[in-house]
Image (cartoon, rainbow, N blue to C red; front, side, top):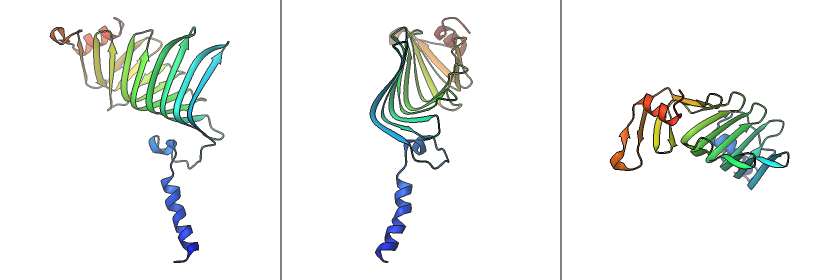
Length: 198
């Protein structure tokens, strides 16, 4: 085999092995190269000289002619009146700013400070237009509020009604120490964690 044919046979191997974050997690079939790649970066969005959103990532990719951003090892914060209201982290992050959709994947921890709730999950999606936070049908989401913990499948919540539900199996417990822990039924757990609202 001559050098020229060896070179051309190596190109497909190189192309197949050099994947972006977009292909690693979210499996989009379009074959594109990111227009911008940012390493170890922090972006802050301001309105009226006050921070409203902060995004930090090990890697961020933005694509030409698209409103899509992909991130790896991502942390995020949202602010209300200059104070952190929500914060979290995840292994992978995707947003479509035109559609106002946000997808999180891998080791998600999301804290809503105003509601004193923390969410732990492997996959979550936030739709800003409908104010819906949803998990997947078969993945567990764990919610912790005060001394209550609830875990279930098929999670969905509404930012408008400030309520949530699970469409699949659910378990939970309440109590500050192991001796006083009490097992909750699905309805009791939902009522406790949503502050009485259903």
